[in-house]
Length: 227
Image (tube, one colour):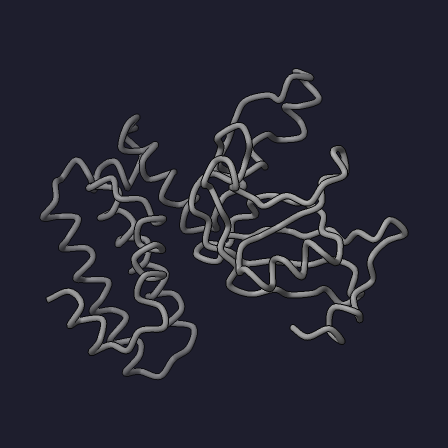
């Protein structure tokens, strides 16, 4: 990003622009902070997020004391050019409380308790994470009417058999060239793959991290790195 691009941004009357920080691996919104031009330029120069503290009136590097730095991947600007979206690879929790992200309370809980309410991770990640968490709930508190609970109770071989069956259905749908069937069967396959991960209690986040590790590497190079 050159000087012209930075100059095109619309900083507010105090010379600040809000920046939304997002984990590029699963889309989780980690935090919101403010940058002045110096903070943005320092971020661009170092590849580590820097912000302007409105309360202390100082420039600060995220993670300078905690080592929980945020390594920048991309910087996006909204259509009005007055807000930044920065995708990052975080080295640790984004929130000063030690939580992974700052958004861990529902507004309804906050209003009800006035003390932050019950912590939740439901703002993290996307639908795969939500489905996985539901699978774990069914595993830990099974009910007779739960398909997931019955599948897990049947054991690993039954779980893996379903993954194999659904993979076959995806192949047949793809060969049939029917878009709706491909989408439907791919969803079934992803669901049963999540059940298999739930059997081993491996969260999707670990898969995201592995994909992120491989990202940008050639297939042959990546395989060689695994010996």
